[in-house]
Image 1 (cartoon, helix red, strand yellow):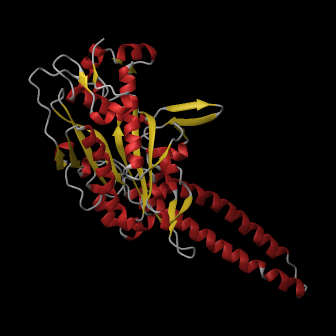
Image 2: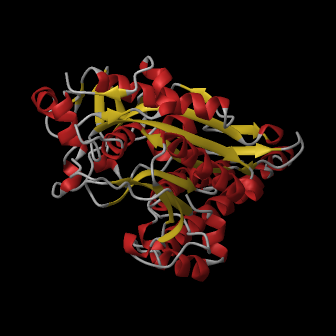
Image 3: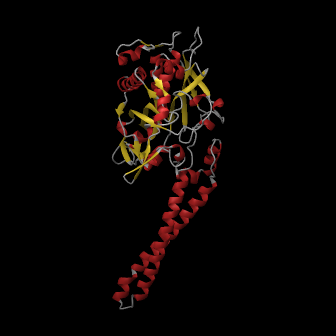
Length: 427
């Protein structure tokens, strides 16, 4: 959520900054809603002041033996007006708050101009695209040939865009998740949490998934309550600190978390609908940080490097791109995408997004900090990034480590998690 004072005092600057986004919204509505709320608030305060002044006359009238009935009648009339206006004020505040929830974040001034992913700017690369002296296969074909990926059985169980991992496929996916968690906790200094996979509407609103992306979320009803399946661990981990004031001396707080993730995933055509790239359910390790505003962009660089590190340890070629304004997404002020090389696609494919939300999520979730007891509480900056998506990592390993005989060499760092196994071969 944007700072309402910033909108009031710097409306033209905010309007100009948001106009560069690839989003549709009517910022002029803010002025109307805010003016209505402020006018109602002024009326209520005026009536309350009048009510207070009138009430002070009662002891004086009684002392002088005057009839207080007219004053009591006047106070009753004022009280009824205040009650009515308070109802209108509550509605006006709700309307303004609901409108504020629809406005995207203000892009950082250093975000590249542009409207599509073609305008994203490559920052750096690791390794070179894998070359083969044979015709490489796509990971879905490799998985089928090896008997480790089974979308057909998953379709029978659940429908399209699900996969049953079998035997060494399941073991590989689990090894990847454990490798990520161990690396981020022991090498990078994150504290692991294992949160619920179902969250409340308030939690989804706190991180910015609602109200804008409700149609893309999976909703669960049970026991008379409403829940949402998590689209990312960002949601439960960020909301661990909702409505809290954090100790500034303990910042940055750094968490990593594994969850299954559940997304409707737009788009039904193209190669992304095959294999593990765009699933309704997938596994991911998330990195989340809470930090002071003055350190948040340094922390974003560190977080991005932490996500890169696991890919380097796996020996997977990738590149980092800085996302342009039009491709930035609703909640981020700045974002880097890490894209892994996928031979079957002949291009780099996103495997991690690392974002700085500045105070956007913290205002929605009311997460603040202060350094000393007497200080004014200020909003933290929140950051997160995939560290990284396990399913896409499985796909990248299958494609980049495939051999001419259809077997898959297991990256060395994963072998301890695979019981020392060096290769996945057809049985």
